[in-house]
Image (tube, rainbow, N blue to C red):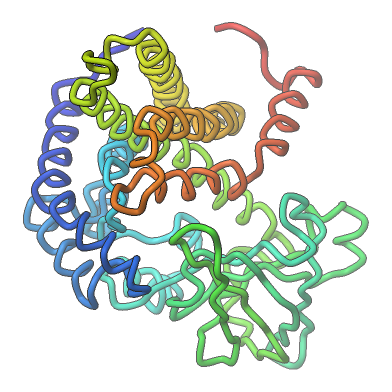
Length: 390
């Protein structure tokens, strides 16, 4: 067992850290100002400019296979990257990547959708969640009915990340109602690649955070047979694979954000004085800092274990649920303590703490709620799918 980063991992981590500190953090005040004014976080074209700068530094398609022009750094490296990028709230993602399930496309689909997405020419989104099917993904209602060599899609999707900007969506719909009922939603659903110009509409959903998901409406949207992604009636497994990857990534983001927040609290505690002494000398503050540091470290290793397991080609779903559950709750605990340490200033919009406070609350909901993660973890243990210990 090796609990230290390799030289290569340290090099990537430090390079990303420098990029974040040099290119992203200086934009934070502007992002806060623009958001207070109700404007998009970054001016049009700024994200692409930042992505090209990252590309010049060698970071393009960090987890994209080399055959598609990516760096293919692996999941462990991906976890480290997410931790570093999440130390800022500037909305940035590296270019040159595509949704993991798009790689299941046939050659024609890869040419039409995968490659343009990797190259930044198209934007995608994934749609499984519906108004009546959030945690219970087996309860989806959207249907796809065969009509000649086309499928006609009807229904709604909700809380879809990137749905307002996407050029196409990978949507899950019921294609065999009897099979869907018989298998409790495990089969009888299919994943369709649906271009926006085929007729679906999106609507911005306002939330308590800066994140703005979309509601999607499909009203007799006709999709050609060749736009089925993967196998007919087997789309549920694609959905689980998409969600499974996203889960431990939430934990990685929480670790990076919590590290930055805790450092802010440490710096502030050294400067802020009460009754003639820095509050860093107050036991109440020291304990909040100590508890937060332990929390962060525990979450870090849960995330890295989930990523490492995936790199070994092993099933990491149990560990991914653990990383997501603990990481998301850890992030909420830390941001709350950091706000308390900053007092009234932490509650203002002059500092990003309240922004992160609102964002962190979402971590416990999307890509599987706390309750769903607990259900998965306990079920795995009770049914003997996993064993305690190592």
